[in-house]
Image (cartoon, rainbow, N blue to C red; front, side):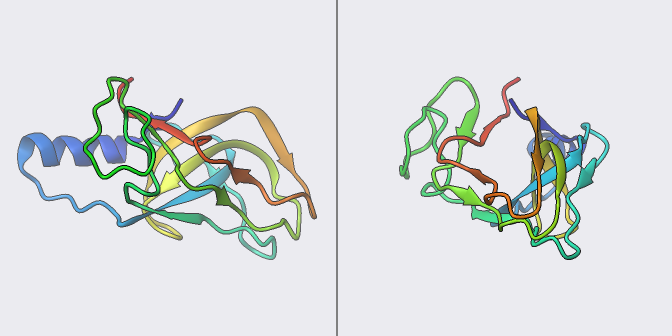
Length: 149
């Protein structure tokens, strides 16, 4: 399952309990990491230089993210009890034009580059991505994010 970074935990605490404004991103971006992050460290993302790697977007919407009760394509509020959502749309990266290395984790960011890592999940088992391999992807429901842990 996923872990929430200290950055996002602090934003939620400040917003919910302290009345500090927080505007979440309208689109979230999937990224692949060759060195796993922690709650307080960024890890190492796959290099974008000459590799055909780029973070992949998934807009924040009921169409793209499942309700916590597992319902897909719903506009109703979530009613589940596990605090878990997943992608309702497949997320597919480009075909590697150079070795991307061994993927140790994947993360969700608030920007297409730079920005802040919000959630991350360790990749078990690790996956080596070589030049010309099929484009890495997350099938529908494969990228689960949980905030009740």
